[in-house]
Amino acid sequence: MLLAAEPAAGGAALDQVIGLSVGASIISAVLLVLAWAHRTHRIEWIQRAGERLTARTGQPGWAAIPALFVASSLVVALLGFMWDVSLHAGRGRDEGPLANPAHYLILYGLFALFIAGMSAVIFTRDGEKPGIAAVRITRRWYAPVAGIYIAACGFYALIGFPLDDVWHRLFGQDVTLWGPTHIMLIGGAGLSTAGIILLHREAEFSQEWRTNSANPAYQTLHRLTVSMAFGGLLIGLSVFQAEFDFGVAQFRMVFAPMMIAAAAALALVAARLYIGPGGALFAAFFFVIVRGVASFIVGDVFGQASHVFPLYLGCALVIELIALSRLKDRPLAFGAVAGLGVGTVGLYTEKLWNDAVFAFPWPQDMWLEGLAMAVPVAVGGGLCGALFAMGLQGRLPENRAIGRSIVAGSIVVTSLGVANGLWATVPEDATATITTQEVGTPDERAVLIEMTTTPGLVDDDPTWVQATAWQGGGEGIVTQELRRTGPDTWVSDSPIPVGGTWKTLVRVQDGRMLTAVPIFLPADPPIGAEELPVEASATRDFVPEIEILQRERSFDHPAWLWAAANAIVLLCSLAILAGISIAVARVGRRIAAHGLTDEETDEDGVTARPTVSS
Image 1: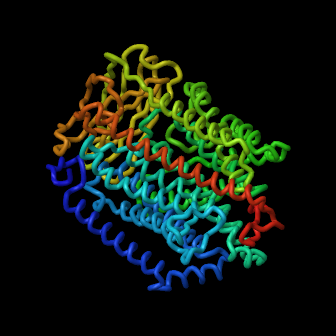
Image 2: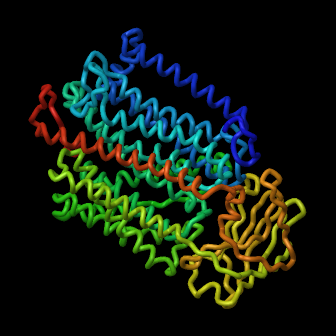
Image 3: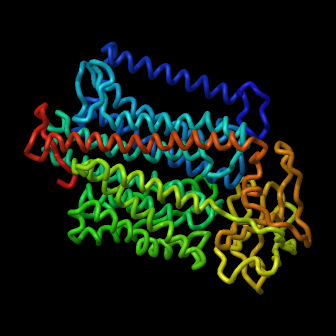
């Protein structure tokens, strides 16, 4: 496939593919040699590095080294990801992985994530068992189960890069965050944060931590690190909302509250149950600080498209208030009730923030369907968050079918919500007559518009009727809610850019209807598209938004190929979810089997500490 003729907008140039392949192969070979040399005692500097970190953190090297790599990798990857989204929103598609500067940050972050997991896997030698849930690899080689999971997340994310190029060659460039291979890239990095929390829990049952845990400085650092890791989990789960954050959501609005509720319920319920009082609020504040810094750097320092983000503070406060009741002593009941609170009261606080700063307010039109999707997903997320905390505490339900049913049910409920959100309609034989008035300059063209639609197309309370201009060459995104002047007429109140490389359109979402009509589209020879010029007055058909926003996509492929490609990505994603479930269950069952408490020891004589809050 790499040697086949390359469509200009359907994959990276062959020299970039070869360059990346050679570079990745060299890095992988070097890492393999280092791992072999460490395990065979031919080099000792990795061991010494772990010992130095143990002296500074109290954690064993097999946990301290990965924690250092994960912290750096995820911060860099988050910045690269947000920069990448802003570049695509402002400039459109790129010419390959090496033509986009943000990709270098993402590649570093994902490689460092994989190295983090593998450093935990290869660190211990001579038959030493890291923690009580170690997995036997060979006769004298054991690895922490969380390290294996983190490495799997890194590998899952890394293979998203070559698969992304294959995907573009098959189906064209889907300029959307929600492309299947794009979800692999961000999902692997985001879910790895659960692995680092679990790795810290495994480290609490090590000889090193038994020796050092009485030191108050080590205890404070450990508690702070784990608390920040829960904030990192919230960040990882929130990146799926980035299109809404940048104001170029390509899917129906009901997704926004559902995704916010899911992320908040899972991460913040787990944080409150495991860390203790204030855990949910700390994670939410950490999220706001990190995302705020990333937003400032991308928008103000790099000068790219700006974005906003949910706060989660209202959701965290709801969870903290519910935890004041006795429900906190019944984790599953607490998770369900907290999820319900997040999906209702918590979302209302997010609506106040959303309507104040986001490009898309949450109108009454979407609330009934939005709550029908968000509440069950939030309850499922709360239950899964409670299970996560219970696994960390060694308190999983004795009946394993309960945990499996909660995880499987939550995946099914979320899948049904996603399927419903993706179900959008396009009106037949609907048109818009758009009259434009030039108000810009020859170098910076802009227009004011008046639009008249087919009678009765839009009801009294649509989700949005909005003019959008994006991909204008790094000049950001322009969105403007059109002002209604009659039953079927709208006007813009400020100029909308056209010309150059801008893609300018009017977007309409009303209930399940998601459609758009173009105002100006530039010529795009690589995909064989001619310019659609601005006209003083023109009547044009409403079409699916995706045909304009993802103009580079190709629909000239067999349906079975599209289904098979999506099925492969789905199976990989389910494997990652199964991985964290198995890892948490393994750690939780081992803790419970040994009956470990503050004053008890495991079979190796290692004192256990049951929770961070203890």
